[in-house]
Length: 579
Image 1 (tube, rainbow, N blue to C red):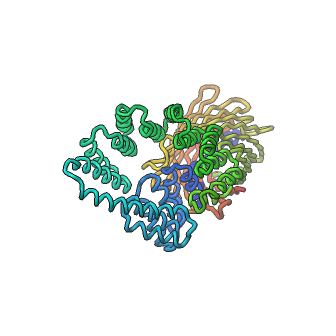
Image 2 (image 1 turned 90 degrees about the vertical axis):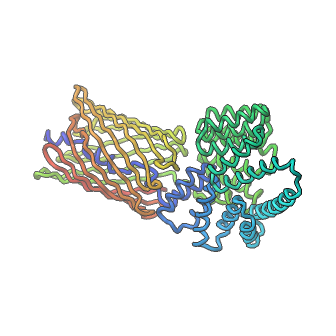
Image 3 (image 1 turned 180 degrees about the horizontal axis):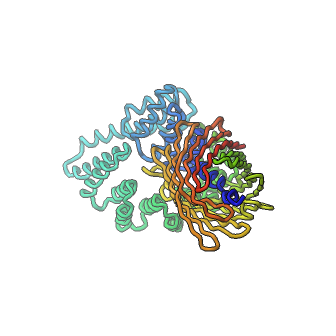
């Protein structure tokens, strides 16, 4: 009996290992697409491109996702990637208006006006009420007229204007290169222009934006400071420094910058809109809505402010209020693809049911163990979730029932934490009570070569009849191959009340094979806690998960465990339902 009790919590570790540890890998293609659309609408273009590429990795012929990716790349000024996405979408759906509109925008920004005009006109002819397409046609025509006029004027300019002409040519060349996503070449053109006109604040500001886009933030700030030295209080330079702070993720500096702009230009619509966007990133939803409301007071037909209000309400979990604001914005800007996409986002599912059961076969004729659980979670808000779980485990004729409660809270887009408590009435082999907590910090955002990259930690105390065990487990988790492959490494440390200590590790890999099918596997050489005793254990494990439908996922796992006194084979099945 003592030998059986020393194996008490084996199933706990196996369940923790077998459960998917990357929430992003548990998402379905539709969820990835919806999250990507939402991120693009919130102007989080790097995150949007990352999520949409993950969705496309699972379903490459998704024309809607290709179009959304194209607009996300446009938001990142990556015209080459945007052109590729829209081109693929048109090859799948030649009459897809949004794809044609996106391609027209790419050609327009690339300076290919002769190619852009027929594409945009095709959209307006098919949908005369499309205000965005009509505006693009008008802009293309104006740009064509300006180009012709500029060419005519250049031919008539006198010799003393050659220097200014050269500056203008370099600025136009830099603009085209920047629009095409060729930032190094654009920077060279702007630097040549700056040598000819070292006090031209327009050149300094655009150089700051280009250099900042290349993540050379200190140098970008130097250009903005030079512009301010020439023209103190220059609004474009101050807004440039604000954007720089946002790029660096320095919300404290961004807040100071936007407050400074508003102190001198309190009714500037662009500054107020940026104030609302910064407040959204700070999760200060009250201030964000106030800023957007001020924009509406100055400009009652400002659709962007209404969209901002909708984004605030959606972030607060008020999907109905968000849809009302989006509908009002759509009435002002009919045909807006951005607003229609926000309205198309499905209301979030707030409930999640998790069921699982395992059967363990022990060697040497010892018998079988079973371990089953049922959990129910509810999203109180987009940032907070509460959950409860009941676990029933049997060991050598004894049955323990454990009840657990947990709360998860996201304090920012990059940092979240949880706390839990569990109790086992009349415990035979499980801990009488347990408390635990953990945190996760995203140190590299999606869109980077190795992103996202997260640092995590879990701590727990288990109280048994004769002793207590404290365990700590820091671990790192990262993704490669556009997020399809997740790798994690966990260190496990445990100690009891009498000074016994043990250390180990867990390695795991998760792979999204298709849009709905995922596999995982790994190896653990870590101490197992059994009735307060630390048992050395080696485990090889693996499993699959399959999204049968959008709200339903089924799982299967298998593991083989080696202990000093016996071996154990574990077979598990489970499902998750969202509603």
